[in-house]
Amino acid sequence: MLRDPSLIPLSHQHHNGLALCVLTERSLRTDASPASVEKLALKAIDRYDLELTNHFDIEERILFPAIASALIPGLISDHRRLEALIGSLANRPDAALLLEFTALLRSHIRREENELFEEIQRRLPRRTLDSLGKQIDAKAVRICL
Image 1 (cartoon, rainbow, N blue to C red):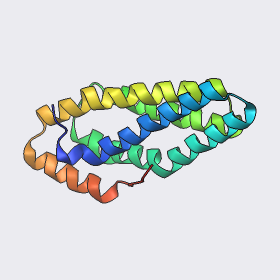
Image 2: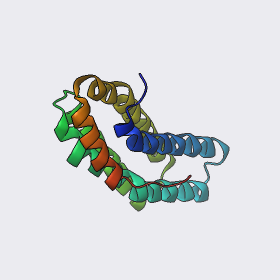
Image 3: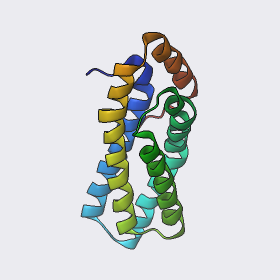
Image 4: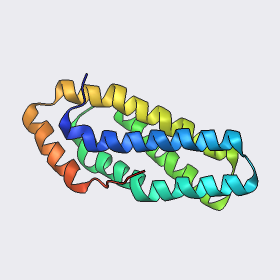
């Protein structure tokens, strides 16, 4: 199903998150030295601070309350786990933690795109989607990779 325009800003942020996962994992395969791991951890933390906190806030304050879905408790749990992993990376950059972060972020994004967003598009009326879209658009941080 094509993505509804109301959800596109969040899908763009998802794209950026997936790019972070790919680039981090590729870089770790090339160079897993402590200096490289520290640099990659700082990039993940920076991306989290710039975009993912905004993304999670929009979902938890605007999107999730608009739909009763069995997926939401698990997605919120993922948000808190990703937050905790970033805190751990800030205190102790570690390749295994970076890989845990990218694996969770990737699966989380896939679940939102393939399950939650599809459910939202099927169940919510056009008027609700349009209202959500305006709110999302007004709050979404847009960055260029």
